[in-house]
Image (tube, rainbow, N blue to C red; front, top):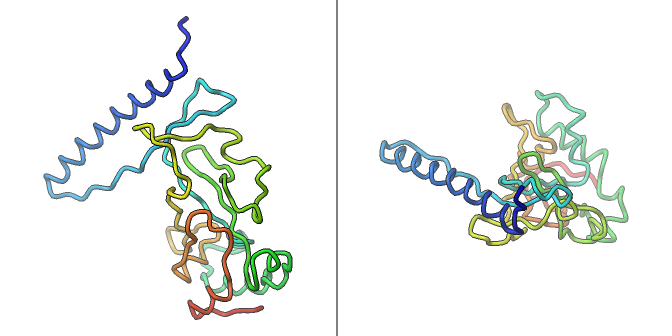
Length: 208
């Protein structure tokens, strides 16, 4: 059995992805010619599990964010309004309850935790602020090599899309009440947020 050369998996996987992209592009051209709307195909990234290098992965990747204790939504029903969750969250987890965070980030500030997600992928994001997550803890790059694009360009972590998290019929995301009420989501790998500023800017209740 022939042994695949070091770049063989890249070439094989990229060729398969190129054929898929070409098919998508042809279909998109036909749909546009017919006056129909076309959704853009998410950018795909190529990488390998360092423990199983012969099984390459190809998937879009995005950054998932979690403001401190925003999974409080697990305690609520789907028909509970976002404002009810916000008020409960503020009462149970006010920034003043966590002096270690205010010492690290400033008054009224809480951390934001980051994860890389894709098809079958959910790992802590690399290059988070060490005040939020220690650099010696496992993250995506502990288990996978550095993703690259079909043209061999390496992934720029700050350039990954940040997911939208909402709380409304048809989209009840964990922690989605924050973006639903404020219209805000963090920029990629943003380490913390000032909750009082966010509440004041959105005319929302605030408990110190």
